[in-house]
Length: 571
Ligand code: FES
Image (tube, protein in one colour):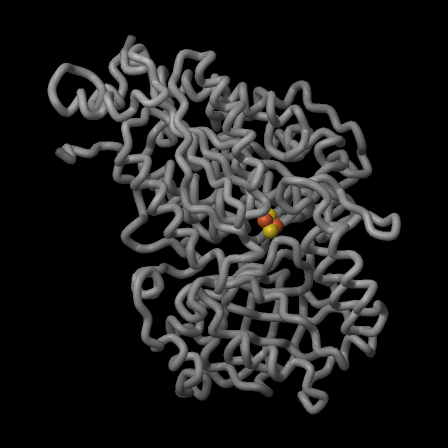
């Protein structure tokens, strides 16, 4: 049997090997230390991450698969982030979760790892960690929940919360009816069932090659997820034996395939920052513009909320990711490999579409061009993104008067002020919401529309923000503006009344103010004051070191790989 990394701890007859083995004997027999692979199950199960609560069950199936293949499975609880609960935003903690997981993987006597994630930030953080420590690793996405219904109508969790709350604000739904939908929203274990960030990241992780092909998107309560988890347990032992590390198969071609998938499924814009961060850990030269170049011309084939009609349970029934990828197989990199050692494209021969309403054929797409558009211009020198598929087509080219909000609190205080000077053509600008400014880059870019405009029937407006947008949200929203206002970006110079020009076909975001006059302005004082607020602990470290959205909003000192070596013993 080949010498594995864990043998550095357990092999031999000296005092340290004795200590390492002795303390692990609570449950492990002698032959556990005979050189067989030790597999960590990096487990984000937590009662405070409701979308991941079921991952302990998944871990049990993984364990059986690992044992069956001759390995030793070890549950490793890691930092977990629940999108709906964690304040001030789970994104503030993504890099912390990634850093802590990386260090735990490196510090412990393990040879490979199965990454159990689900809720939005968990899969990105786990993949960032695995990429940096570069141990053989495979992801199991925890899967979406089943579809809940309210008054006989399916509910898209997340998306329908936004929709129903807007209906209350618009006077079309009573608050009592709204609250009655609450217990119907979350039908089962699993993450959000729309094509939000969690669904997107599970599918994108598979397109990247880090998931057992065909598994992502399997609903959390589906017995096929248990079966696939068992199979993944067997697979990770193979990965260790073959030393198939992330660095050996994740290439620019893998990210190309992930971007094609992201466009074809109409996935969340959050995948842009996460993929950039993961690529940064691997040293893969991925840029923001790659999302536009690679994604342009990719058809939107999946009719899922928030942009469409169906939900993840329908998606899985209709054939899932492989059926989508089969339709765009000519756009994929044929050489990009998966964790199994086989190319992604080799899994597409037997991947039929079972319901062409949910997953469209290539010749009848929902949109012929579904890619995320990357904008540049006066207001976004380093880039900004917009998801045209979730926007109103008539607003993709627009010139309107800015109504500026300096903070989220400012937005909430004034958006419903009857005296707010705003109309349907106005452009809502929200700053102070980038990685440094908030801090943590929250999902606030999909600003609520002013109630008085909702009551007039307005359902979308151009909105611009240096923060992010929930993957379950929709609208003509320009987000991830870089550099952000707090980092000296020109968004800090915009004033209410300036004319903003959005031109998505030409990928521009500009301001109609004479350049010299614009450049001579002082940055907004509230934004600067917020950024300069005293901080301690993680938040201080984060604000000092976080990079901008166009490079993935990772910490500058976490970029790249540092491998699995630990040269010193603790005793
Ligand atoms: Fe966890 Fe939506 S809140 S995936």
